[in-house]
Image (cartoon, rainbow, N blue to C red; front, top):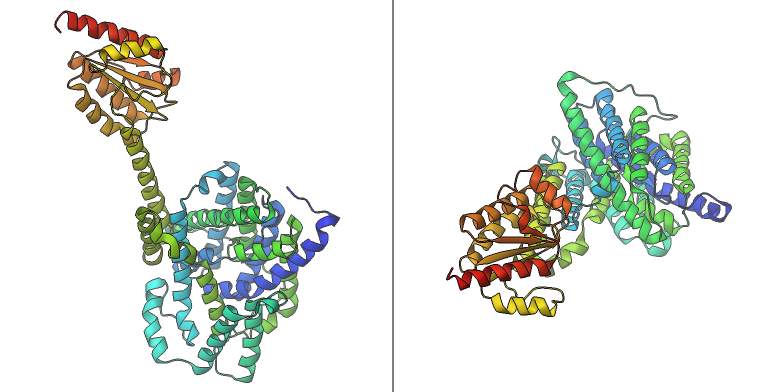
Length: 543
């Protein structure tokens, strides 16, 4: 992990300053979109950015308000009627949960969300941000809260536009989408749009503006908790914590790829949690690792924790000195900046290629996308992860079952001459099943049926457990059924290579009721030899 040093100092200073310039318009826009006000967006960028950098596990990461977090926070702000004590108690609790995730070392698990789920989720977030800002592009506020009311308000906003606001929003969109790259190195497109749009609104009045914004240092917010809203607060905090963790760790992966380093996911969660706790205590909106600001920081030389901390200190100086000027910013300009942010979040790369990949992945992405837009974010992620997990288990089960043909001709590994000789003599009477890898619950139910089908015209059964490290309860019950079926049909069952852990699971679940010690062997050759002797003896006696 890189530490602050003279070698990186110049790059960290320039990276932090550039990230702050990029963060300024976004923090104002996110704060306004959240309902808590533009100054809350700046406070969120300052506190989350500083403490996540100081205590986090990704040195070059810059944190602050992000699109996904604001979509959730805006819903919380509305549901709690904007009551500061309750709203920011939610942010504080989310930070505590994130620290708990880090302490419990859950970072590596949070990252195990399949890509189609992440793609559908992020694309849905992008669509929500655009929908929430669409009416503001025409000089109107969306009626009510949520995605559906915002979409419903768009036709009336289009039918009765504010000409000045519409002109400013069109100009903003042109700037953020078409700003020349060579100029973007000095003045980022969102900042250029913010300055140009605000200056023009002073010359051509008529567009709604932000109005008075508090100046100076933030005030302490005392969190409160009420019995009737406790469940809302906890559920909302859990959503924020999970979303912020996922958002941050995905950005950490981007930073790793750019700097060729490896982040500490659990430490990153602790840092993000601390940042959100401080943001909540001082009226800041929640944040997470911000991909665009992190990329800008790295590209302009930021490599250590100092760059993220300086980014926050630069923003703090802006709040203290220039906050009164922000009151002149038109809503339409911020709306245009957020539309570009939503557009950037949409995963167009995957959307363009999805039809070439597995259809199930495309279907999964669309399910998550629809749930994200029209239901809620956490439901979308949970459903997506569950469906993806079930699909994966089904694929693995199908592969396991496809390899189980009961034939002795397809036994893997080198057979000794003695084994080949014994198997040749009894190959039509012996059923031989090799299990490769963990025997999952997905294969268990079909396994019993397949065994019954193959065993009808065979005299004995051998099960190879030499490559099975563990089994679950479903597989244990399947083993119980197989062994009891063999006992009922009076067909001998031989098992070799089963480790002590698997046998213990069978004992603990009492799934070994039809198994005897004489059925177990350590070596394949011994099991084959015993099965051969039984079959030959049985045929000799006409059995």
